[in-house]
Image (tube, rainbow, N blue to C red):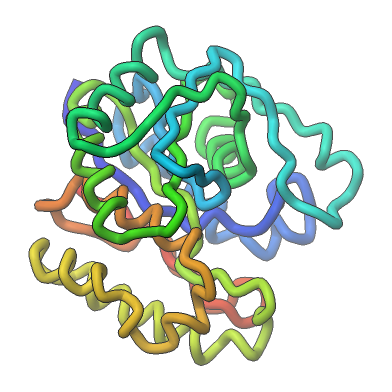
Length: 265
């Protein structure tokens, strides 16, 4: 098996693939997510998702063989609280292997047998692998969102890329729930342009610029809390010396938001 790339994906809003109007709005995103298996070129042994919707005091590793569903969204049609994405969890030994790598890097971790798939995980996974036939598990974000700690997490997880594991940071390049529509146009476009410039930099400069991401244009307008941005640091840490490529870009999500996704390696 070859070394797999890593991704930072903008995962859209709520259970959008199951809501026709939202699915139509996010058609460009759907195309990019559905194309990922072809870009990767082989079926991963497992997908490791680092989602903006699960954080703990350390870097917890999902270890259930059959994770449950977490419907962590509100105000959607009743049927969207019955969605099932029945992918198996991490293959035997892989959750422990993941925790061991995190521990070896001097980072705190534990196995969590109760955590289920949040929508930042099951929604993009469903578009990528609708048959739910690729094992799927998660590592949490750590409270506090330290860029250095999340880059370190990615570096710790990097060996998994040679073991058939696809590492995906799942968030959004813009995430301000109080500012959607036309008011988001200027800040999201400016921040997205900065991000594109940074992602095209040489690796060392790229890491340095992202460690100082709060100095980007409209940084705190676009990310009042950076839970949807720090998955990028983990995805980059796992492929730190490698080139990044924009694989999704939409300048008019939900009537004004500019959003992007990246493949690294």
